[in-house]
Image 1 (tube, one colour):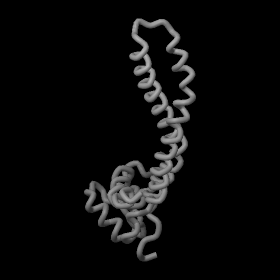
Image 2 (image 1 turned 45 degrees about the horizontal axis):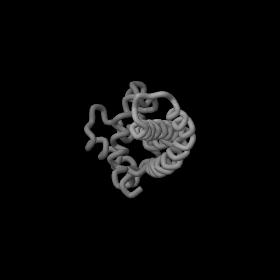
Image 3 (image 1 turned 45 degrees about the vertical axis):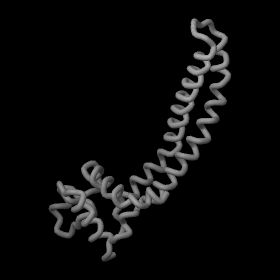
Image 4 (image 1 turned 90 degrees about the horizontal axis):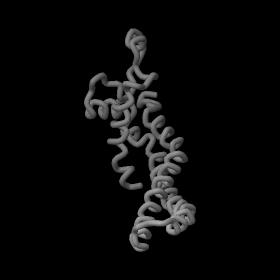
Length: 157
């Protein structure tokens, strides 16, 4: 959690730079033609990371760099916990199939087959656990991205 919080400003600037082109709510040509239209943080056309960071700081203040950090920390902790839990669960679920595979005819000795079975079991359970974790935590990742792209209130408002 500490590492994610420490690099949150860099992550926010990175997300703003990556998503400013695809953001449909950003400054458009119709906004540029309107004299009362104001730029959002991160809307620096062709700007560097330093320019985007300066824009965020000037329009929203220093705390804006940590917007979207809480879901990021929750997602990271949840991913670790779910992977840890699901890996063991999938290993137990796959175990009967792996034990059954030892009864199949093979030219390999039993020790090599057991080693291979453990490797395949770890590979399958790890892949299934990772896929399941990603499926469950995608809504939190989506929320984190939306919060990071939200400009919220500026210093003036």
